[in-house]
Length: 192
Image 1 (tube, rainbow, N blue to C red):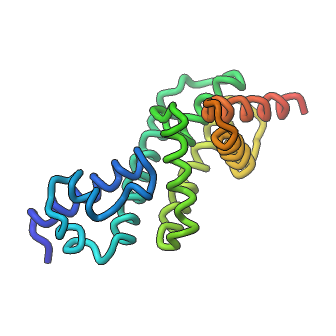
Image 2: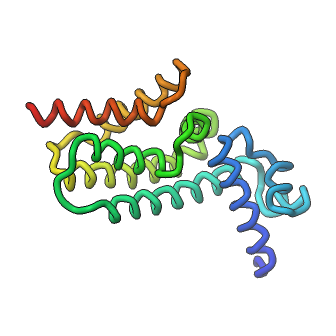
């Protein structure tokens, strides 16, 4: 049975791991870094978590919950009614990347978390749940914006591919590349 102090320590470790993950990607999550960020002894990470993988899963879950809640808030705060393809693309970037994720370094850390599912199979169920919730919001944004239905999977694939290509090519502007590609797809769908 866990004590209130133990639950608080565990929550502090998860919060610290989530902050490291969101800012720097999964490689930043180590026992030592998490303990230091939480202000707890190194041994606390192995006391409250079987291994680093379990801590990483908890951090990915927390970040996914926070990002989904922020995306929901962004969708709810958007004015109702038809919007331009550019406005819809900007809102979709907020849903997919997060409204506060502007720099290429932040976008790269975001995608590294998703790619970590390949190296850490335990992350896959958590990432799938987050992706499903975000896909529902993508569908809602497109529908509420007055655009023809574009499958969320297609929009997300285009958005992710555009952002990742911009990161690989360098020169900045991954978020802008994502918005440009999505706006172009939505405007083409409007003409069909």
